[in-house]
Length: 347
Image (cartoon, rainbow, N blue to C red; front, side, top):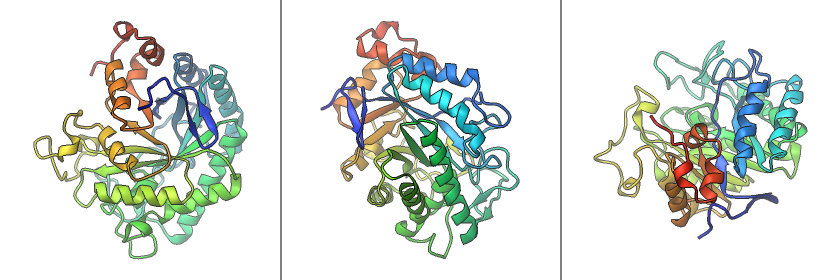
């Protein structure tokens, strides 16, 4: 099996090792979403720490539909200069850099109204307005414009956010998508919006590395099952994506108020042996059914666990979150065997 230190390619893009920084919104941008010195410093440190691929936090394609108030924005061409400085600083340290693009849909901040596939709330009291077909087409081109800005700013690629019940994710899940038109019902129909976004970006930008982040499993009644997650992954792969980033919704505290299918005692056997809210074993299941690289994520916070995940072949690239917040040098120290020097995340 490949090791964390081994290089890998996403499409034709060579990445120096298989450690990625997962996208985590840090709320460090300006009130308009422009990149600040604090944003650049935050990512530069992790690039200097040896990360092969940095996926910059969810950038808002529509400022009225962002995750946090001081989110990074990618909704206007005036953002390109700051984003260009950010990409250049990261690449100067030897890391490859993608930026995640997102419409927060039924969640987040800055809403004029919450929107989604159906009027099904994800967060308490946030009842979204159901999007029309015209709305869907307009948002599709917001994704296209955001991807164009990312490319113009010098990012090596884009990650399309289709997880965690933000807009595209809400369309993918039967829990939040109860439409009766071509965007609802079967997995093919629920994936249609995401497929249209991928194909529209590809038509606009041509050969440009694209990752799609999705829930491989949702521990929610009527949410995405593992079987559906595999089916959706294959549909997304067929749309022309270059890599899949497999997240999940397992711990019910992630979206309070939603009815879980299982708990720690009744969880599926393949999830046992991992932290309860880890998505790593789900990535491992999906990896068996696709031919493109799979990024795994979830609860890897020490060097030996990182090595063990790679040895088991559960993913092609390992995304790290809190481990890198605790110690920007986590990857360098892990690759050098300096486990005892790592500053560990403490809950």
